[in-house]
Image (cartoon, rainbow, N blue to C red):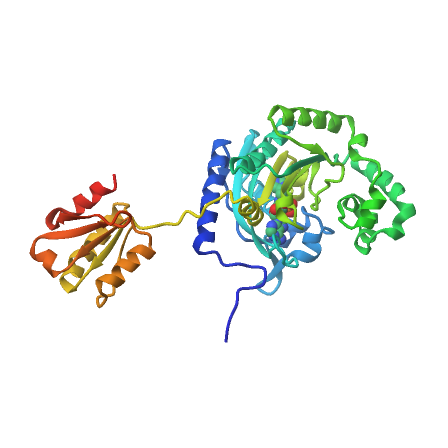
Length: 421
Ligand code: HAM
């Protein structure tokens, strides 16, 4: 019986894995250079972590969560996104109590039961960053600048940074009513999904991709024109800070995000390099979220990018090379005596941090061994047979130039180490 991986969940290996590792280390470098510290939260969280924050009526909570029953009763969820679990963890460990701004990043697998297609998976990976305890609009600009730096650092310029403000609990309810009044006469032309959203989440209609719905809201009133004084001030300082951080952006009144926790700044990075799933990453401010965990309110802002989508963009641009891990030395023993000499030496080198591989098969000839050294892309092959042992020598072959040199068998470890400097 053939058993396959779960639909929408992929194995990573070979050149693809090499590309991922290169990207992952770049992401960590960027996070470190912007002074963000890594945090890891568990894959499983209690259902309420998401239903209370991401929102009961969002696509994620309504239909995309993988749930697991804990001891037959308690509903646990495979995390569909990183922010809610992050805030749960901050509150649980009282990390916000210092009152000082703190910066965190995470790189974690996420799970959403969506219809798989290019760039849309059921297990995918997000790299995200969050700042807590900083209400300043400049923090919003910084978060966007970090995400912008990721694409810039890989030489990708084919993306747009779309920003908006979704207001706050003070100004959003009145805007919601205004929007509903505007849409109401055309309610029948909306898609079924948007008709359902109309009463409780009318803002989501703004980002529906269906042409009819887009037509209905094309000239709808804009949230940015109905912000309260505080949100207005925040938004205009944010836009200035973003320009000052040299990030190119466009204001897009339809960026409202598919998660309920946002206040004020909301943004998305989109790219034509991706095809239908054009969102490279997104995020925003979520100042009220902590109260849903029973904590006093503290400010937060962050982003998450989809790794798989970043990789698609990099491949489309051919901006990333696989960087295969190759051994420095491939040990090729010819015969039992050579095997016993080289086996311990291979471990001595590995322990000194030098990637060394050895053929364990004892019945293989020189041709086969050289083929392996070639296939593994080893820098050097070390050949040892009974004749060489008799003369106290080993042969080191440079696999690129095919040059060979004789090394003294009694000082082999040190001679090989010298080759690595
Ligand atoms: P999100 O927009 O739901 O935001 O997801 C962020 C990114 O994850 C998307 O832009 C996309 O690149 C990637 N992504 C989402 N779903 C999939 C999927 N099924 N397959 C592949 N990639 C996907 C959040 O998750 C928020 N937690 C972001 C945030 C952080 N807001 C504040 N802080």
